[in-house]
Image (cartoon, rainbow, N blue to C red; front, side, top):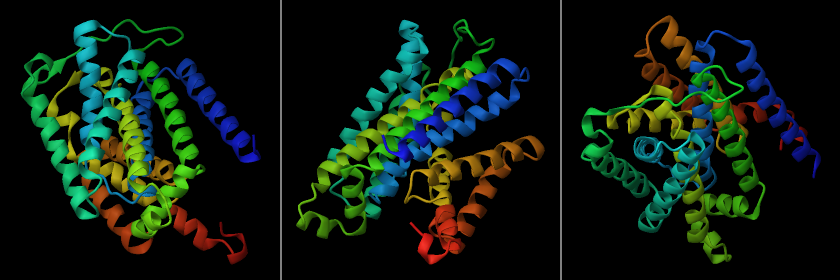
Amino acid sequence: MTRNNIAFWLGAIVFLAVALTMTQLVRNEYPFFAGYVILQFIVLSVAWTILGGYAGYVNFGTNAFFGAGVYTAVFLAHTYEAPLGVQIAMAAVVGSLLGLTVGLMTLRMRGIFFSIATIALAIIVETTVTNWRFVGGAAGIQLQRPPVMAPFDSYVKMLFFVQALLVVSSVAITRGIQNSWIGRGLHALRDDELAAECTGVPTLRLKLVACVISGALIAAGGAPAAMYLQYADPGSAFNLTTSVSVLAMALIGGTSHWIGPVLGAILLGTTQQLLAVTISSEVNVLVLGIMLVLFVVGAPKGIIGLVRRSKPPGERA
């Protein structure tokens, strides 16, 4: 293993150890209730970057994959009382199949046409679930949490740690893609897809791989949300604000490196949680729009671009 890999995995172990220690020492449940949302957005924004950042195919249908993950978990919990781990695994499978289907149908489109197609996907999936009465339909469905597992004393704390595991998994996968031939190929087609095809880069195959992996991670990140809220309805599961938030977090952090969406999700997610407590949750969308405009105008390459710009020329990566 290289020095960077060792540092990454040591950091991941420390992160998980701190998360687990918090669940054992902190008695107030609100930090875990808010922290879960921030960790969830890290998973979603990092997963979005695989297709939207590395490949340059802007996906506005994040809410379709997220909602598919939520309702996969709802179906398994309601029908088979499946444990949380099975719900997450099956949500990842459903998300990957949805990503493959969408990829085969839309990835020959480019630019704005692909983005519009992903919005249409979200509408189709939401309409399907809305008319599926077995999982509650438009009225939604209440869920009963199973008994909490040791060493946790509350289900919210357990979900917080599960989402921390998903953060490590999604970041590790995204980082691995960035440092592999897949990542180099995706960056090549983002810069000039026609030139990449002419040099032998299997662009369609790479886009399909990116769509499948991104869809699987987004759906897996959404699966615990059903038990987190103990309720699911199409309006919240397929909320377009989720797609806009994830897009903003990735762009604010920077999409050229896996650390960008992590920073963007932490910054914007923490800000939203603080505003929800101190002012109102309705202000979140306003702040989201303002921050997105400021970064698009003043720092189009996000926080990563600002950091690189501040370094001397000889130290820039």
